[in-house]
Image (tube, rainbow, N blue to C red; front, top):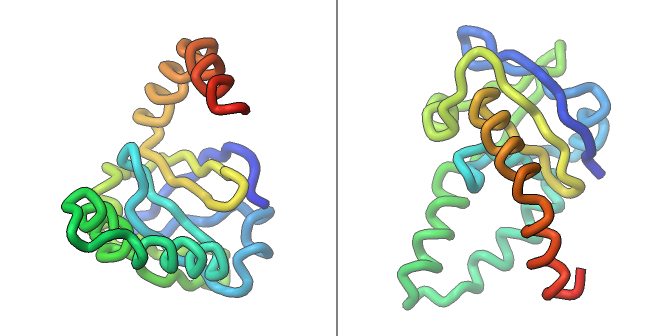
Amino acid sequence: MFLGEFKHSIDPKGRMAIPAKFRSKLDGGAIITRGLDHCLFVFTQKEWDTLAQKLILLPLAQSGSRAFVRLMLAGAGEVEFDAQGRILIPEHLRTYARLGKNVIVTGLYNRIEIWNDTEWKTYKTKTERESDQIAEQLGELGI
């Protein structure tokens, strides 16, 4: 389980330290890919396998399904940790998520998200401002 919000930085080579409390949960391997809202998703190998199995079952004839599968699978890659607990974020993913030097790493139970720090602040402020409306909509879903 990944929980929390952390400020980190990316070095000029594209390396970023994963929070220490998350590293032990990624011992079995990790996958990084494009996420939604222009962030990056990092999954454990087990969570990735579960998601990938669901993705490949989406209807090939529907353009939205094809687009989403491409978004998630085409840019995905395995990450490896160096001795300092850093991962190398591929350039195409840094570009997609508009990552600069400063980033926010969030734990969202079954995945980690990596955000451009400015975009995270904007997103978080907007979500906090709309929290009552969001809660009401989720209430309609039984949450």
